[in-house]
Image 1: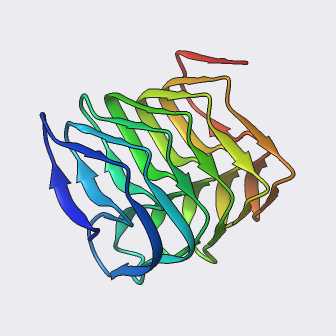
Image 2 (image 1 turned 45 degrees about the horizontal axis):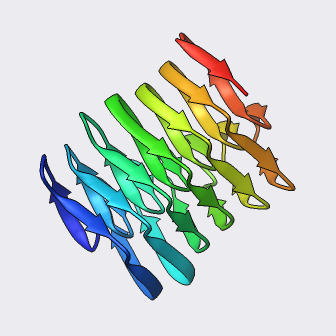
Image 3 (image 1 turned 60 degrees about the horizontal axis):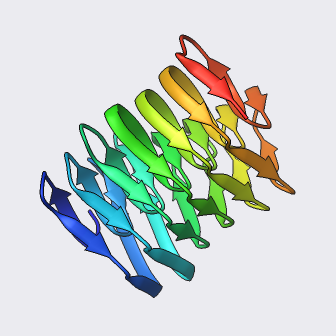
Length: 193
């Protein structure tokens, strides 16, 4: 669920600000702007403090402040999430719940709140990276609290790259596998900057 449910190649969403909105679901992908991107671009979109995204079931997945799931040749750039995300599912991120294939998330900022008492793979920018690239993104004072595999920038990295991204003045907490940048690195192509 999101302002847009699905995008594919050729979609171009830009210059939107959400001041107060709620996106709530029990199953599937959820994000304030797009539930799932299988192509296209989203740029200069901002979710302010009145925006809430929630996933009410442990069976749901891929919950993000901006986009639930970013994959294939999708690109998300220059976006900010300042609202609140709650959920009991796995793969929760301040910008995107999951990133895959050759998709790119760049120049995005998270300064909101994530609270998940049972969720795993939770990050200030992306919950689960299984391909693609995270570039020049920042968790700028955001709060990330989850059960395990929690990172200030990325929760769990399977493969892909994370470059020039950082966490500053952020609060990150969990019970197991907690890191200022990443909670858990499995296989990774590169991490730098």
